[in-house]
Structure formats: structure tokens, C-alpha cells
Image (tube, rainbow, N blue to C red; front, side, top):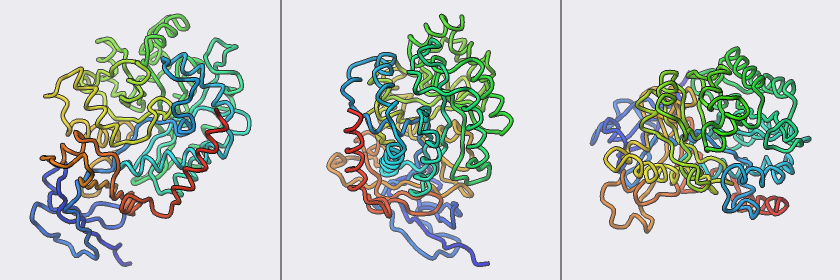
Length: 447
């Protein structure tokens, strides 16, 4: 059997690690060799890509998103509102989603992520009104079409307004239906193997939209199948007050009471923790997806990233939903993380290398992956290459720092599992203009 073709990505302008300053050799879907500065590969190569004008990064990993929300960016009913009132305004809009809307918004969100250097994306879809029961299947098909690595979470809401929750009744499901579909999706799509392109996690939406019984049952099902758990937690003070009123305890205490304090769990946001809670989360190895743009737009607060990381929590980065970010650009989100976290911890502790690390290795750790998120021999060949020839880079010194400080927004080339998915800033095989036009048409229906 012949070896797969080998490609030398040669002499990049800058990298995170000096060990691959001379580039990397990709063979099949993995990284086969790191080339030192000024060197040449020890193994024979079939092709060479001249990266001398590119900054080379591991593919960025988005740890939290809501793809469908690309249809409701800057929606008039949700402007200038904090989380709870923002949600109450948008739930009735989202209840009108239909299958084509999920298909198109997923394709658009993944395309936006790819173009920003993202190679792996996690999505949290929790809306399943009548007719939308196959939403995750639709998303899986679009990820396969675009060649993006995905961790799709089977979200859920079981507490409607009639049970004291926030969502309208038309958006919630019975717990039996939720658990049955969760098991179906795990069996159909979850790949436990090295280099998996599709994985499934279970993701009850939040403490204020699911029951205690569903939280416990989801944890049990996840443990049985060896998959990850995900939810929103400690995003706002309103959530803390809700948990105290509804359950008689703070969000982290509630999390522990339902069996969720483990290293199979990663949380979106993680802002309002006290010192004791940070220690407990770190000891358990719970991951945190930091979503800086969303936290700023909704005025939710600042995630205590370094405190959590020091305690033992993996820290990743998520763009969050495009209705609370209003974008899905991963490299821009890395810059937002740097700016917001510098306000909390200072310039010396929050470096450009630190935030790139959160968006790569940190997000991979949140997702329970050790085969992506870094450029190393044997790891998946997920790579993002950025040129510094746009106007904002004119006059820049350090190329790696410039990528973040000067505001890169689009990758030139992106590779997923050894396959080029973006070439010269265009997604292979995609009519982006047609996609954008259909997205606009569908979005107009929801206004």
C-alpha cells in the first residue's frame, strides 16, 4: 500500500513554536515532521507550499456557539438588553425556525468560522420546536459538506414558562424525547477514534431551562457512552438569583448536586464564581469556554480565566451565538479575549501567545481532545495560515503579535485533516454569494 502524499508547508514567516520554524510536513491527515529553522525535511516530499509570507497556527477551535443565531444578528427586538430580557425577546423569534433555516445558518456559520482560521467547531443547539426534531442531523450534513471537524451538542430545554422557566412552551420537549434522541445521535454520529471528524456531547441548555431530573439523566447517559457534557453556567447575576430561588443553592453547588462536577464537563461563560467555587471547579478539571464578545455585548461580566486556569480548569475560547456576538469570527475573538482579559489581569500576564493557546490547545482540552490544537508530530493536520498584507498590518513588527494586536480577520489558507478547505481566502467548492443571499432571505422572515 502506497504512503499518502506528503506536503511540506515551507519556511513560514512566524509560528507559535520554534520547533517548526522551518515548516511542517503533512502526510495524509496528520503532521509527520517538524522542520527546524532553515532546514529541509528528512523525509521525501511530493509537494511544497511556500509559506514564507504566512503566519502558521494550529487550526483554531471554537468551544461554544449557536449556529442558528446567525439568522438573528442585531435583531431589532433584542437590542440593548441584558441576558434574561434578551432571551425572552428572542425565544419567540427562534421558535419559528424551520429545517432550511437550520441548514443555511449552519452552513453560513461554519463558513464564517473556516474563513477565520477555525478548523473545529462546537455548536450548542437546544431548540427543537415541532418539525425541527432532526436539527442535529441537518447540522452534521453541513459539516460533512464543508469538511469541518465538529463537536455538536444535543441541547435541550424542558422547563417552559408553565414550569417556571424562561422559554415558551413551543420550544421545550419532554424529557423522554430528549434522552431518546440524545442516545440516537450518540450512536449514529459519535466517533470515539483518533482524528474523529464528528463527535456528540449532551448539553441541557441552562439551569433555568431544564429540570434537575434531566441534568442528572444527561450526566448518566454521557457517562454510559463516554461523551462530554456542556451547558451555560454562571453567566449573569440573574442566573445566580434564579438558582437560589429555584434550587436553594448557587450554580456551582447545583452543578455538583446533579453529578456534573467532572472533567467530562465544559461550561460556557463561567463568569460569576467565588474563590471556593473556582477551587472546586479546578480540582474537578471542569473546562470553561470564555466568550468575550458576548460577555461584553450583553454586559454579563468578565470570566476569571487565569484564576480558573491556575486552579486546574482548561480555558478555551468560543465566539458564542451570533445574536450575542454578532459574528462568528474566531481570530477576532482571540483578540477580544486578549483585550478583555488585560483589563482584569494586566498586559504582562495576558499575552498574544496566551490567548492563541486558549483558542487552540485550551479549547481542545475543553472538548476532551488530545489529537488537535497543536502542531506536533502525530497530531491532526489542522492548520491555519494568515498573510499580513492587509492595510492594518502595514508597519507591523513581530508577525505573530501583529496577527492578534493589529486585528487579523480572515485566513488565507486553512487545512482540516490534511485537506485544504480554504485556498486564497475562498472556501473550496462553495458559492458563498449564493449562500449569503439565501441567508438574508431567511433572516428577513424572522423579523
